[in-house]
Image 1 (cartoon, rainbow, N blue to C red):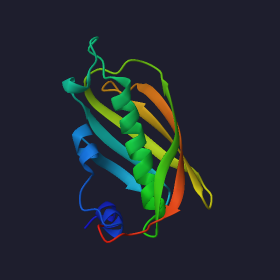
Image 2 (image 1 turned 60 degrees about the vertical axis):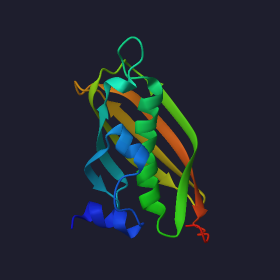
Image 3 (image 1 turned 90 degrees about the vertical axis):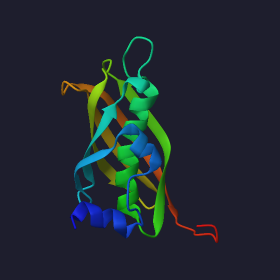
Image 4 (image 1 turned 30 degrees about the horizontal axis):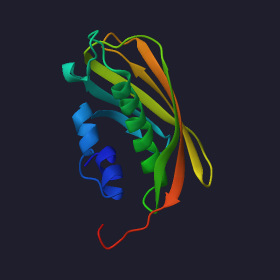
Length: 145
């Protein structure tokens, strides 16, 4: 078993979430201790706007997905991380094709964690940048969980 797989198993995940699967999530590399990750996504034609470029909401979801994943792995298994602030700077339109996101945790306090991510288009050009703040809250299981 890879260290990546073990990190997910440690927080009770056996596969990417359904939203991650919809986006075409594929883990390239991850270092939980360093708080870094590289993930590829499928920029599907279904994600494009009338101009043929990937709609910004899908790009935002990809960036948030990777920063959120790293935050969850950093605070698990006793806590969860939830995005409370997300800023995206779109630098250029993104064509349909492979998309890569590189993210890292920049700071972790007792109640808030901060992350940054860069999104690269199918030509390897940086196309968007994001910063995020994520609230750290204790995991409370209910009878329905």
